[in-house]
Image (cartoon, rainbow, N blue to C red):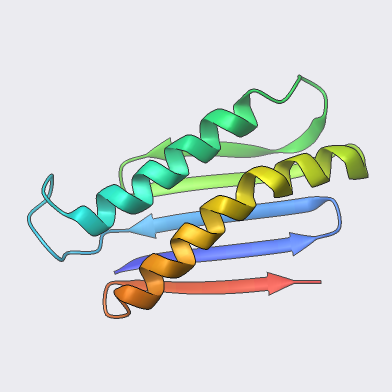
Length: 110
């Protein structure tokens, strides 16, 4: 199962995805490929944010695990990261809705 955890707390945004959908053989699983594509795009977008705007956190993007964890220096940068995450979240929500036995999504915002 793919587990997706999204957390948003003022200037801290985190989207972590791990696991495998297991709806087909590895390398042929369209659910995994869909989730991976969204996360790889997000990682590239966040990596393009100028150095120093994200003051703490980390980013991992590899098979079976993606994690974008960003503590932003100001509200403007936080909004930028959130702007990048929103279409990814929309896609992930749709995938979780269509494949509930393969994808579990949890969202916490404050």
